[in-house]
Every structure is written in C-alpha cells, then in structure tokens.
Image (tube, rainbow, N blue to C red; front, top):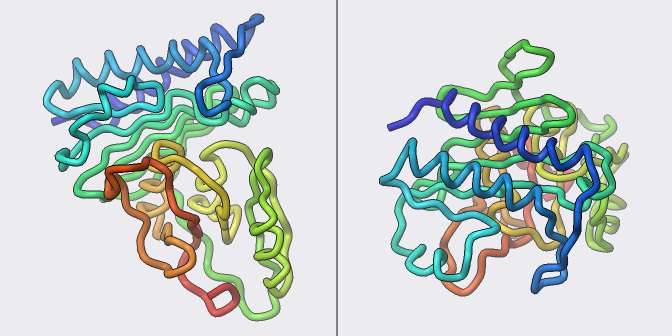
Length: 259
C-alpha cells in the first residue's frame, strides 16, 4: 500500500514548503473559530494532500484545512489519512520552532501509523506496529516511554507552551512532586514517547488532527493516550457532530498518583 519512508519524505517536503515561508515575512489570517492561519498552513496542506493522493489514491484524506464538503461521509471511512499540515501555528507565528507537520493513518478509530516532523528542529518521529523511532542529526534510533516514576520521585509533566488551562494547573497540584516542561504542538506527546517526560495531561480542547500522528508514536513507544476522566482509549472519527477530542492523558501507563 505504501512504505513508511514515502510518508516520512512527504512530511519533510511539506516542512520544506513551510520553511520557505517561515524565513520571510508572511500574512496571518483568522479562521472562523478565531484560530490563526498562515500561507504556510495552506502550502503544507496542498503538498501533503497532493502527495497522498498520488501514493495512496484509494485512501481518503482529512486535513485541518480541508473544506466542509471533504468532511462529508467521513463516518463511513474505515481507513483514512488524518493530517495537520502545520500543528502549532501560534508557535510558528512566534518563530520559536516548536511546530510540526503531522500525518496519521487511522484504521477503525485507532491511530495505527504516524509521522511528526519538526522542520526547524530537524527532528522526525514515527511509529507503527513495528515500533517507534526518532531521527535527529541524521541518525535514527528507537524510542520508548520511560518507566513510571517510583513513589516519592518527581513526575516530569508536559504543559502546553500556549494553552495551560486551569484544569491542568489543578491536576498538577494533586501530583506528589512535579517538574513542568513547556512545549508547543504535538511535540508534547513526543516527549512522553521518547521518555523525556512522564505525563501529558491535556485538559483543554484539541482537534483530532492535532493528536493523531503523535498518538501513534506514543503507542508504538509503549505508552497510552487515555480519555480523562474514564481512562478509556482515545479514539478517532467516532462522533458525527464534532472533530474535537475529549480531555486526555498521555502516559506510560495508569498510575494511582493521578488516577
């Protein structure tokens, strides 16, 4: 059907299109939900959608920048590509480098393959049933989640660079001892996947395309993405009326320290 390297290369091509715009002045627009949109979002969108249609013409594609008509019929899809052409647009605008290209394959509600590429950092994460990997400085290494902290140890908790909610702050206060690590975009999930953080409680709104690619990496690295509360696995394309995720926790596994 496709090989992983083809999709990784496509993510990098989209990243190159983003960087062409990142390195010069660019316009910022407000979408209907008041979130920012740049020409880089659209350039990446067209690069990925056109590429996927060539590589896997039989698989539907749903992008954050897809039109409303492209969303019609999605509930009948068993397998489809779910992409965020530029995750972390606010970080892109701030020019702090913490934004990513996200490409995920969803099969029967689960993220089964994902690529997360950070073009400024030149870091690539991907994962599937064969495992999770990170490419950095031209080297590829397998990654896995860290062991759950022992009793009395400090929990490294990932917080959003731009969206720390009151619920997040209250959650962290209930943990025994914490060190909060701030990060933008889907890189927050990747920090848990590579064992640099223990927990990422996302107690605020996200969309399905924000999380799917990194979700696949987390699970491939031995971790879990669980709805919170309830702790059921986070699934995709299960509700016809919304593409918003419920609150969730990214972790190595469930633990009595947080539920």
